[in-house]
Length: 205
Ligand SMILES: N[C@@H](CCC(=O)N[C@@H](CS)C(=O)NCC(=O)O)C(=O)O
Image 1 (cartoon, rainbow, N blue to C red):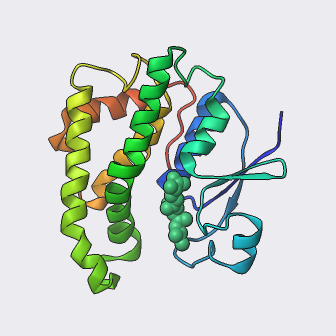
Image 2 (image 1 turned 120 degrees about the vertical axis):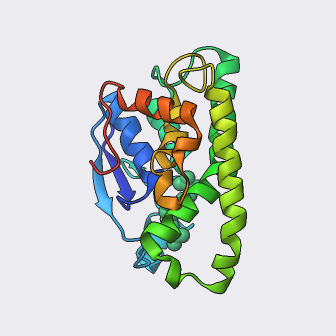
């Protein structure tokens, strides 16, 4: 088994996706911490040695570095039951992972970061101007998820997959960003189902 090191900030849901995937698969991960708030992913050393894109998470596999949370989850899980066997379901799983990165994370995760970690009073005028649009777009993403989950336990193929893990990471803490999950009962039930999975760990673990 390759040695796995997660370069991360423990507050980040993107990093949690990788920890959760590894935990569900029983894979040991070494963790290295960087503070996003202190700019520790933008140092010359980080940019040259870990990720030229200046962001965590990065999964280090022996001496190779893999940025992008969903790519790292794929590396961990591609030969596991967290990826469906059926070819359409595999593509559908990717559909939800791309949805997460385009429609969900830039809204739900950003508002959580701004409100719970940066502090609303410290936002720039430009950031404040983006808040209503991000709130509306985050709500639209959560509403779409709720509709999809209305008659399903998990996103794809009737069982837990990387689609669920990718979307769960920031959804279950969305209230920290000002989203009231009580509005989306199917999303709440789905969150509870994920938390029951054998090997599950919370974001604070
Ligand atoms: N699409 C990337 C997003 C990575 C990302 O935005 N990381 C944030 C923390 S969650 C970060 O490193 N921010 C620090 C910075 O941009 O300086 C992924 O899914 O991994």
